[in-house]
Image (cartoon, rainbow, N blue to C red; front, side, top):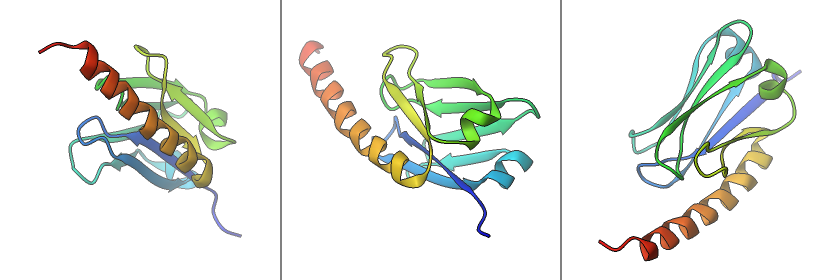
Length: 124
């Protein structure tokens, strides 16, 4: 029997690339996990306190880091998305790899649109 994996995905606020990392359910329960961008300037962190998961998400939309407290069922079963508290857009996806990958692709497109619109609105 293969071990169940959970994939975490976010958009790096530094370089704009989609970051995905998979961890086993056992590893998530046993220790803290980290998904670092290849550029080295951001990392999603997952900590488990025995009751809740605390997920620290570098937000590729507003460029801040959001903290979410999630019950184990939300992190370990099905698929879920965490939102940016400023823009109300989803900024992190957790679940099976295929679902996370699909949502991240859509997020990359959305973030590029947001960046273009912000660039047009902000006179420098």
